[in-house]
Amino acid sequence: MFIFAAAWLAGRVPGEKAFPQPVRAIAGKKNEKRKDMEYDLITILGPTASGKTALAAALACEMHSEVISGDSRQVYRRMDLGTGKDLDDYVVGGTKVPYHLIDIAEPGTKYNVFEFQRDFLDVYSRLRERGIVPILCGGTGLYLESVLRGYRLMPVPENAALREALSEKTLEELTGILKGYKQLHNTTDVDTKKRAIRAIEIEEYYARHPLEGRDFPNIRALVVGIDVDRDTRRARITERLKQRLDAGMLDEIRRLLGEGIPADDLTYYGLEYKYLTQYVLGEYGYDEMFRKLETAIHQFAKRQMTWFRGMERRGITIHWLDAALPLGEKVEQVRRLCGGFSGANPCGE
Image 1 (cartoon, rainbow, N blue to C red):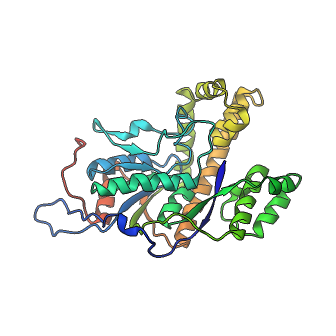
Image 2: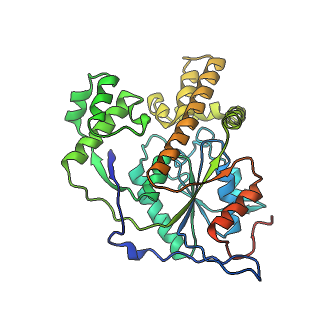
Image 3: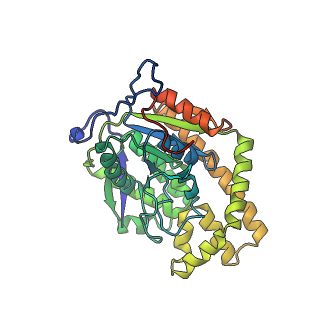
């Protein structure tokens, strides 16, 4: 199995000419002064349950575009409710919006940011060659930032000797070792011993090997964030969790376990799979499981917002839209930020 190392890639890189120049989209009103849209990519981000997928799909209809998912878990097939795919959102006014990087990996595998960046670039280049400005949509900050800031990535082989040497150390000791390599921006690196050891393995490899990653194009992106107030976000998360449980999320867990995926592996895929698997195995009662999972998702959404604010500090401009706005108004605000799009709306709105 391979994992990855990362560093920032500044400026233009060799191979960039293979990517077409930005599409110029014209404002829609007949007598209005024409405006050019100088973006190669539109990114819609936000915490869980913020409505970002619905906005991305509506925007894709409006501008004849397609959506590239930037979610670390929605890549897995047959893991629909637990990952919150919301595939119904991709049908707008009876029109199916094309999407990419959903249902591309088998449960039991470990998809990572190196693979995401590779797959993103493949889809992105094909869409740009067709004259399409793609819409990247997701809540996995690391994946989004790997594209927006041009992380230069390379695979890192497992280091069995290092893992053995670290295996007896406590999580606190591992956290201290990792801090010796870098400032910790992502607390998920140290939420378990396994993740902390993996993070140290990456940093150790990167410290000892010159960086030779893939070339990355200079992407000019408009980044739009969905800003939802704390109380509304919490209410949406709770309601969405209830809906997914009513829709059969526990049955999804049981089916995946029945396919032979080990419980320890299933818990790797996120909070829902962790707590629901523990419930199925009898470690929690239903009410306790619900309370723990609900609290954990609230905490996760808060960490997502912390990451997005960190992206702003690291130089990415995010244009925040109020989640309470009607969907049509959000689309119109993005239109204005872009300078307008050409063509009639094909989605019957």
